[in-house]
Length: 156
Image 1 (cartoon, helix red, strand yellow):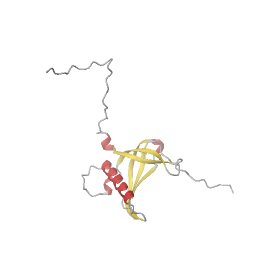
Image 2: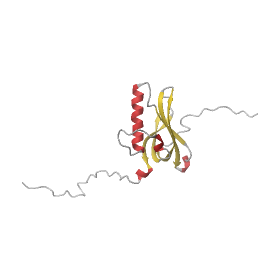
Image 3: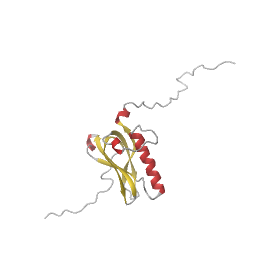
C-alpha cells in the first residue's frame, strides 16, 4: 500500500488573483442558521478560461444577534442588490430575480487573521450594464509651456 498522507490546503492555494471575472449567480439561498438569518450567493466563474467552472461564495449574515455584524451584512447585501437589480428603494427582495444573472465581479485579496490571503468580491457590474457605462474621464491638467491659456477675462 502506498504511503499517502494528509495535506491541508491553505487559503493561498485556492485564492483567486486580484482582478475582474465574468460570473453568473448559480444559486442564492435565504436560511435560518445557528448565527441568525443569512443569505448565501454562489457565483459560477465563466471567464477567464483558466478559472472557468470555479465557484465563489458570498455570505450575508443579515439576522445576526451581534448588531455590528448585522448592520454591516445588511449594508453589504443592499450594495449587492443595488448592483444586481434596478429595484427602487423599499422594494421587497425577490431572490429568484438575480438567479442566473451574469455580472463582472471584481475580486481583491485581503489577509486574514491567520495570515492567509482571502479573495473578497468588492464590486459587481451586471453584464448588460457594462456595455452602457460611460468611461470615466479625469480632468486633464494643462502644461503651461505647451498649452495656451484661454483669453476669457471680461473687462469691467
